Every structure is written in structure tokens, then in C-alpha cells.
Image (cartoon, rainbow, N blue to C red):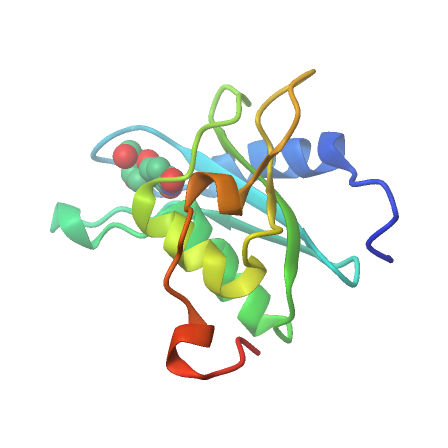
Length: 138
Ligand code: THU
């Protein structure tokens, strides 16, 4: 898929919703799923994984980035993050940073039906990233 191809938001949201069924969320009972498309058209998914030591919880976006890496890496183009009701939720602060590493300012974040997607650059302005270390991101 080239960067001019339309983003399949409906599919991303549906797969994110499906991923919520694989969440491990016995503490908050908030299931979260994430689904992204890479710039070369691959689909990656994730779901939140909680821990009895609450602060060690892995958000859905962390799980998604793990899936991305497992499937060969590359750049994220667009991502939908939803709760169990299928409605998009905002990525938490930590996950904005985690996503920035793999999508940068241009990564598009689903903001819901009939609403323009948000760019990660809008959600995390002035981000610290690989460039600040003089490194490429992949
Ligand atoms: N959660 C995510 O998976 N991603 C976010 O960006 C926000 C929060 C999860 C973590 C926890 O399992 C549950 O939502 C409640 O905070």
C-alpha cells in the first residue's frame, strides 16, 4: 500500500474491537484493543495486558508495537485504539511516546466516526525521539 492509498479505518476499528476480546484486564475490567496499518500495508494488533503489580500493565499500544516488531518492523501509518464498546479512546501519554518511535509525527490516530483523525504530532508536540539520539528509528 502506498501512502496515497485510503486508510481502511473501518477495518482497523473492527480489528481493534476484536482484539479487545483478547485483553487480560482482570483488575480494571477496561478492555482495550489497537490495530494499525503500516506504510507498506501490513496490519498489526494489540490488546492490554494487566498485572497484579498494577503499574506494570502493558497497554494495547505496547502489545501492538510488540506485534509490529515480531512481524518484521517498519513504520506505522494509522492506528485505531478502542475500548470494549468499540469507541476510539485516546492513547495514554506513555503510549504516545511508544507509538512515536514507530510512526513519528505523521502517524494518524483514529478519532471516531465522522471526525478527522488526529496526527501524533498534534498529540505529542515536540516529542523526544530517535533523532535526538542521532539514531534512525528502524
Ligand atoms: N489502556 C490502554 O491499553 N491504552 C491506553 O492508551 C490507555 C489505557 C489500558 C491500561 C489498563 O489496562 C486499562 O486501559 C485501564 O487504564
